[in-house]
Length: 126
Length: 342
Image 1 (cartoon, chains in turn brown, orange):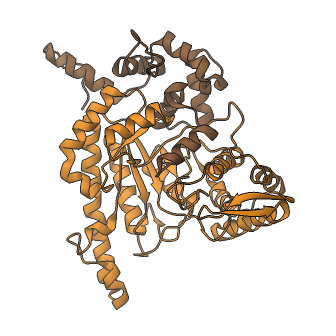
Image 2: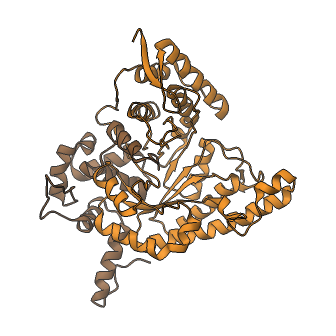
Image 3: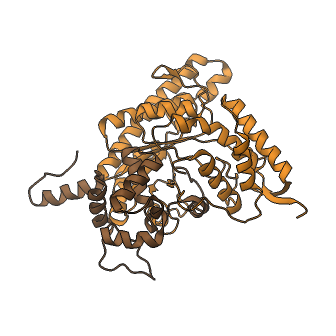
């Protein structure tokens, strides 16, 4: 909500003070804030501990590209850096849910739907 | 530059200020903010720190490496395509989460196209790794005549029909709560990571009450749902005047008391908003906003993401806010307040 309205504002904030999303580990810290309501420092320490890096590394795109690849938690794929063979979005979120011990809604629903194709509804959410 | 630095007014236009003039702006902004919010003013050290940020001639500034914060967003539909916008957030803008939103950013409007929005959200989740939330506004005014079924309290109040105006707002709030809950429930079913109630309190205390009641119901029903509440302004207008939540009168609440109620209701992220004065410098506005928001930081048990989009949080009221102003506001909030996000 914070960065609001014109997308140029978001970009300026990202350059000045942002954790860089999937380029680094901002999405993981955001998940701890969103789902667990953790304050920033607690969320950073939790994620850093799970990844085996320092809190400072969480905003470092160079460090995090290797770490994200190692843990299979998704990397940005673009023209210059096609991440062929690496986890795509839903696959990455399965791994993130396990890594952070988080119930990710769309992952649980995906799992439930796949199970339902086999006649087994275990794993779905209400 | 003859001892002057280029800085900005709240409308984004350039002005020149000496260091002494900037310091005076910072001190006055902090003092006025503190007085309005009945909070402590900023310390001399904090004013010095802000002066260091605003007296720089650099085009852009930033926080120290390692001090970065989470960036959330609200209703950024600049590309007029929710799918493209969410991809932009993920891949270009460095967003840590993204938000799907209808161009008509109102839960009342969304409820008419819920299946379409559910499908868009479901597909976005297949494409995106970063968290995806759904956002809109309570937008209470839309429930009043001529846009909705409820008598228009803005017409009733000038005629001194206070009881009717209050009853109309209560009815609108009830309608709004139903719509917000149904949309949020539908988005959860579609796989959303969270929902965002943006510009809460925009139509006054009844608007804020509708959001708080909805948050409480959602938290009880969906324990893992992320719920952001972003405020419309620094002060809850008492359009009704007598509404309460958990025994607290909503009219006249400043950010720290807004935060306490948002926490009690069960939200996971709070976004205080302090409006900009376009006739004062960005330095003055940032100092004022920091003084108003500062009490939140000790009272918060949930993350605080300061609203710093166009026209709030020291960001100039212009559709293309200049990078120098935005980056200074960004750095100031992070370094002085130790916020959890923007």
